[in-house]
Length: 85
Image 1: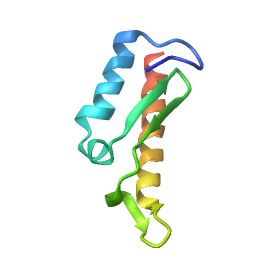
Image 2: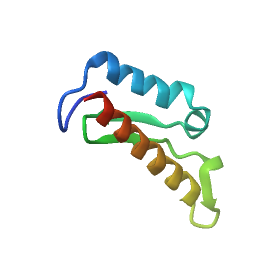
Image 3: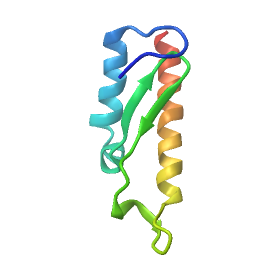
């Protein structure tokens, strides 16, 4: 994970945010959510496409619920970052 935008976060705080997001929030674990960048005002993440995340079988599109859950998680992470800056 790299710090790329906004004020630099304390590394221990950033690691705590990553651990909460990736290891302690069970639904994020189910989705396979992994933080890729973390800064004071931005967080980016990725998930690997899997068959069980498909919402439209014919087009092999990611389910809208997965997309909204990831956006919700990232919004929460940015808020927690704001507290820690």
